[in-house]
Length: 341
Ligand code: LMR
Image (cartoon, rainbow, N blue to C red):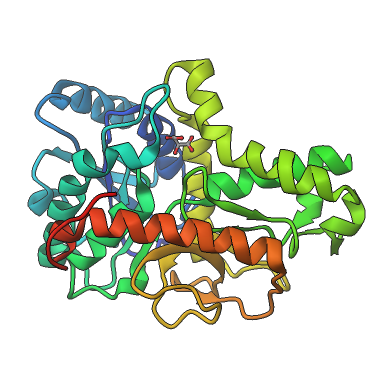
């Protein structure tokens, strides 16, 4: 009989653990499809007082599933306890937006949560913790979080824009009449909001520039762009709640992109801290950009991308929105008095 060699246990914190996204995500984490079949995990679930019973229910279901890789499940409402020694923090918990709301409308309500969680991570998490912020408005929440965690590298914080990348790939594949795996090099630039810029200039289909394959600039600039920008909102209208299953899938994709080497010539999008970026984007914000990883949990920004006027102009617009969001939460980032326009 072969003896399996296990890696050492890692602690993974998930906030909003009693919510819909987590209900999909936690079972994927436990099954080994995210961190690998040789990686035992401990799941540390953060919820609120209000959701505590549901949190207990989630923990019961996880235990009853007898996942061989899931060695511990713990629950709590205090981030200073739950984040103890975590290597990954998946920050999902936040008030979600309802029909007709913009994500920025949640700035005030949710910012406080991420300031507190940043402080808790700073105090008790692994010094190399990787943080993925999902709760909206996720870019600015990630900024608030990293500003409150000065002892953790700012580079370790991500805002989830992988769902937008997946949505963009799906649309390009449909239009080109190919399977989605033929679509590569798709960047989402900027904010996870309706100003986001799904980049069709650098995207490739079967290795050929998407613009050449699709050959319909009007569709790319208008329909494609808007469809991706508004996909989350349209889904809320249809479901009466925000996307959950596809969000969980995209969190899995985002983590896997950091723990496995990026395929040659390709990249993935993530909302990351802009300091030192090579694109001339304003520093000191969290902006979705193209990244590559060696599979060690870290990433570097991709240099060989091209820009045209359309792309530049759109990038400026989403940058302006993020700078405005940042001014509106200055009291939470330690940068003076808030000013919301
Ligand atoms: C999404 O993009 O589906 C989520 O961020 C939910 C939302 O507010 O749109």
